[in-house]
Image (cartoon, rainbow, N blue to C red; front, side, top):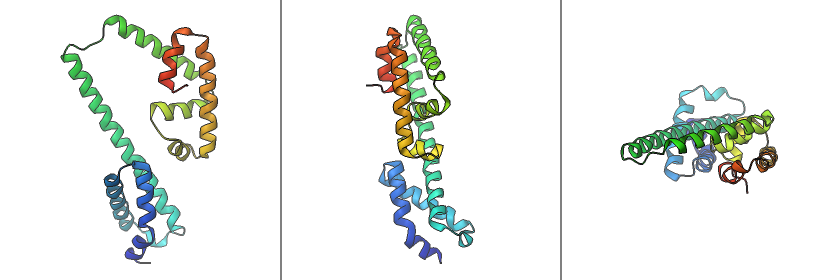
Length: 177
């Protein structure tokens, strides 16, 4: 199979996956281009299951792009916080103490969850990953991700109901409805 045949056979699948993962046409086109450049630089002709291999490269590349975007957003948030602080929009010491105490209580509740449930909640709400991304990362079916997330949120809701201070805020923070 030539490079042209490989591209013609799989570029639609690669682009579709990139578009699904990145949710932006231009980013998907750029990623698709980068992926085929990477593939053509490797010894791809000896690969037995070329489509599976190519899709694995595609998924990994898209996850890397998403991580870079998240890092960029985090840096932008930090700049915004620094700007707000210099503009006098800082929080009072009391607000900071309360937020830290609540964060510690959330962390305590989260760490009480079994590892499998905690991993799903952390990836979903801390890393802002979709169900499909979590499934791919943990090598489990998407349905398992959903059931673990549901069970974890149910347990957290139960624990928060015993602590009135966390209950209302916890619903927003952890996506509990």
